[in-house]
Length: 235
Image (tube, rainbow, N blue to C red; front, top):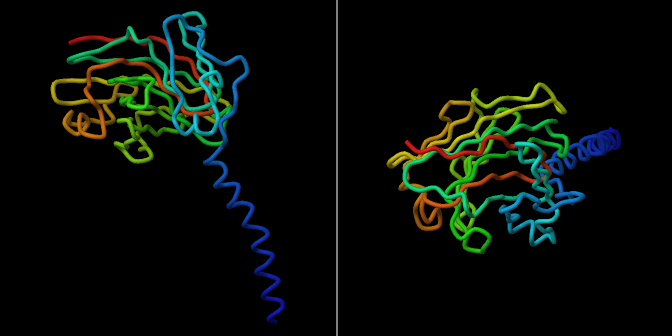
């Protein structure tokens, strides 16, 4: 009987351990190198995350190109792109439309993409900025760098306003906007405010230097998308 029990436990270990390992691995996909990568949009530049640099990745391992009126982004390492001429101050709203043409076509789990504001010292070790990004599974995330990463809604939050792809490989589109209004900073996705913060909780030691600064776009690693309508409006 004892030998039978030991055999049964060993069999269960063989069955379940690979599944667990696969599940954990799905959350830590290595960043791929994008063929023909680099920034080919005049005036634009970017910076990959520090952990990607530490792993030997470079900005040329992701791609930012212009196709018609759209930015075409393919990552590679997680990256933030911006044009230094695109600056915002005071009260403003920065918005854009993001389309993931084939949900999860480069990864094994959903990855986010979205708007960046309040960029200061970008491209340096002291950079600070805030971003609000959507996932094609109905979640969104608000995070920043100041210069160390800081989280505003943990590892992400679900909201009915965030569109979901019908299935892996299907398209999904999100309209994302970040607004600075008096003492508030808000993120709206598909015309609904999904997150609102007091400016004082964002402009603080270890977080943002200011809500004034450069705006741009951000994509997580191993993700493809198109961005249209990147604009700033003032009240």
